[in-house]
Length: 62
Image (tube, rainbow, N blue to C red; front, side, top):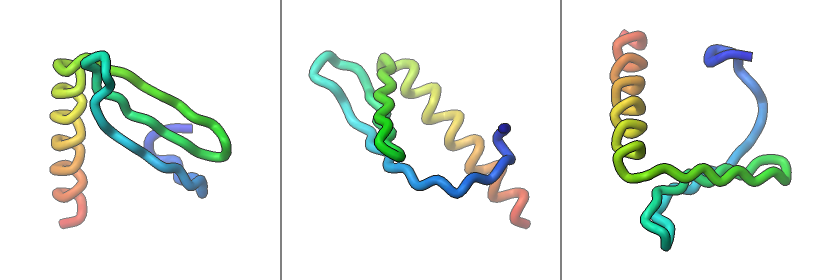
């Protein structure tokens, strides 16, 4: 499975700060919960990657 493989899975994504000063991405799907914690600098890098991917996706749409 890769980035271009489509799947018919519903998931919920929550993003927010933790009480320990981390940024948490919390993913829930089919009874599975995945908490992913990042320090603020890592979260900024992830946000930049998401913005770059969004821009690339826009350019593909034409």
